[in-house]
Amino acid sequence: MLLTIALAALLSADDLNPQTAAVISREQDKAQAKVAEKYGNKKPSELSQEERREMIKDQAEADKAVLDKHGVDARDWARYEMRQGRGERGAQQQAEKALAEKEKEAEAEKAKAAKEPREIPIQKGFNDQNPVVLEEKEGALPRVDTNLPPDAVADQDATRGEVSGPPSGAKDAAKPEAPKKGAGKHK
Image (tube, rainbow, N blue to C red; front, side, top):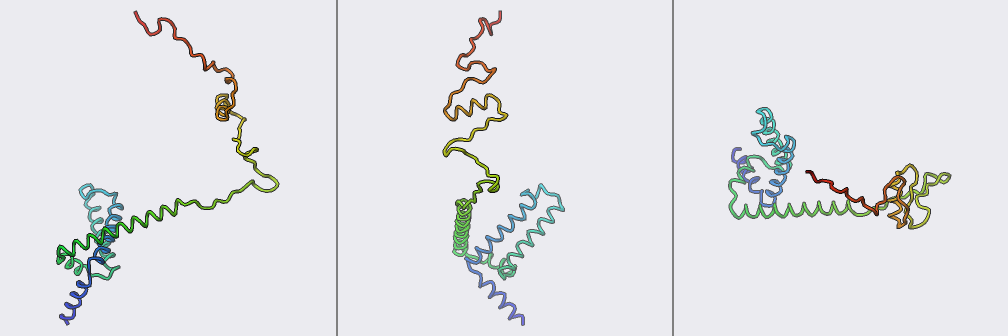
C-alpha cells in the first residue's frame, strides 16, 4: 500500500513538464499579485503582525487554489521545483515568456476591439411633433446669442471669420496704452 502511494506521488511529480509548470507558476504570480493588491502593495514590514498573518494565510490559500485547479499536490510541486535541472528551468522560463506575450497580444486585441467604431444611433429630435434642429445650414456652425457676455460674441464671430466691432465698454484692442512717463523710476 505504501508502495502504491509512493508510486502515485512520483507519477504525479513526473507528469509535470516545463509547459505546465510555466502555466502554474504564471497563475501563482497573478494570485500573489491579487493578494498583495488586497493589502495595498505594502511591504510586510509596513503591516501590523495581524495583517502579516492574514496576508501569509491568503497567499498560502491562493497558491493552494492554483495547485488544486491543476490537480497538483503541493509536495509534488515542491519536489518538481527542487529537482529541476538547468534545461527544464530554461524551458519553463521560455514558456512563461511565451505565455506573457500571448496575454499581451490578447489584451491588445481586446483594447483594439474596444476602440473600433461602433454604429451609434442618431436621434434627430425628441419626437415628430417637437423636432430638435441643431444646425440650420449644412456646414454652418451653430450660433448661440442668448445670455452671452460681449467678449464671447466677439469670439464666436472671430471663429466664423466675421468682423464685429469691439464689445461695448471695451477699450480698443488695436491701440495699446502708452506707458506713463517716469513710471517705475524712483528717486
